[in-house]
Image 1 (cartoon, helix red, strand yellow):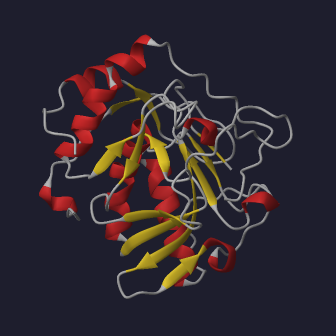
Image 2 (image 1 turned 135 degrees about the vertical axis):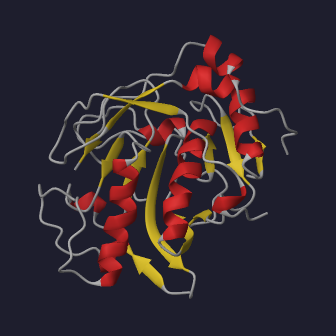
Length: 258
């Protein structure tokens, strides 16, 4: 079921600290503190192009105790925000510590794999928390649907150095197309302007089309709010001409944007 952004309070899972700067953008930084925050979540019934980067460190699965201890609290946090989802057996999604699949919109925004492959729609619950936060900015921008190439890709590797990709753990989304309230579709490949390699993707440019401003706005707002820790845009390389790679890295205390 769809849930409006005003129906539930914003759930904070991170606290701000001094920034650590990487890449080209001015970045705000948050140190994840999921364990304490998630324990306070109310109890409720649970109901693609491949990103290539030689600079992303592999995501190391957390110690076995944490996936056992915290997924229930993460599930309750999503359920408390009205997000419908199903849990997925870890045997079906090897490499994903807390696998789930969304069954409906997240605060009114539908996230859907472009190829309809149910495997590509699996995600780690913690990525679901990031989408929950990002969805508020998406709705304010008039976005009701995000089409992506994948969230989970079994065994995905980063091009260049072969490091483990965030997609291998269901912790990244390759967002390609954004459907607006009036049915218009904004496409990263066609509508992202001024994509000079190495140029900082943020802040929003005022001298570009409304479609390009929208794409940059929803990307930069996610960066400013520390929703994701790795964001790779069309400014990065040709492999990202048609999507923005947004990745949750629970174990780091920095943000990387290109």
